[in-house]
Amino acid sequence: MDGSPESPRPEVRVVALEGPAGQVLARRAAEASLLVVGSRSRSRLAGMVLGSVALDSVVHSAVPVMVVHPPSARREPAAASAADGG
Image: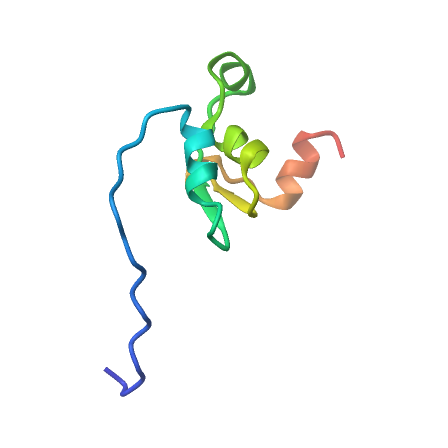
């Protein structure tokens, strides 16, 4: 190592809870600075029919929510504008 101090390790706890995943995540994150959730990036139709944990988390969270998409679902800003007609 280069002599610099190690970054502090985050505290990790495993908890199993019942309820709608997005709402449970939002409740558990109430005292956090940020809630980070992943997205499988299903089609818009599937997302509307099946619901979305990420969307539910955003709607119910009192803290900022970051939704992380898989690399295959990410688009370059220019490509996104062209695809959206803008």
